[in-house]
Length: 238
Ligand code: SF4
Image (cartoon, rainbow, N blue to C red; front, side, top):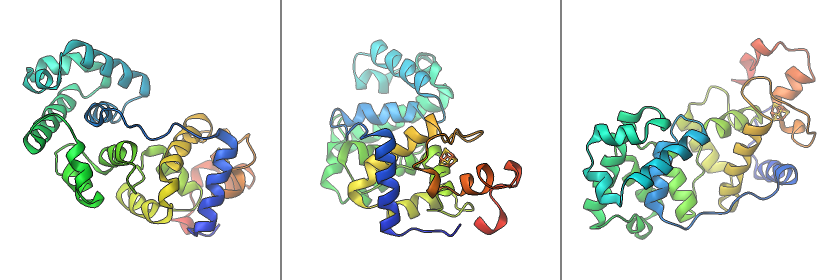
């Protein structure tokens, strides 16, 4: 199955995902800094643990100033359900410090005054904020022309042959940013996550629904073909 990154195909995939899952939640325009902290909590952890840690965080501390000034060990205890608590506590405090020093308060709205690429780079300069975390804020809060690439988006874009299997996460991010039209980016991200969580899991995907099979190298080679799961993806798709 050839790599096909044409806009026509991307739009077909998008339409089929919409037909299967419907339109997803729109861009969030509430407090961007709160969203950024929740995204840091969500790094490498399941949604329910993120929610518990976020609830603890915003119940325990009165405001952002208190979070920034808190004892890091104490903050780590509060956000413990999110995993990697010490690392994430330091990331959160570094982020709050950087935002306060840049904006004079605890607001990320100054980023809307910068060109999108510059704003993304400003975020990525904070240690512990990578392209995915920065893209989530830029896309969800500022509706920027960037698609966050998490593990689901990466896996599915490869199975759909939009991205070679050998591509790193950064390369996948670069390709998807280029090939997905701006107005589809937010929905495409949300739809691929939905697909990855409900059907297209990393192991034993449930390929019951039909619309998406036609885009999928895994389906064509393994489910509907005679390739062993362990041999997928084959060399020539890498
Ligand atoms: S056919 Fe199966 S492997 Fe392919 S996209 Fe659908 S669920 Fe995923």
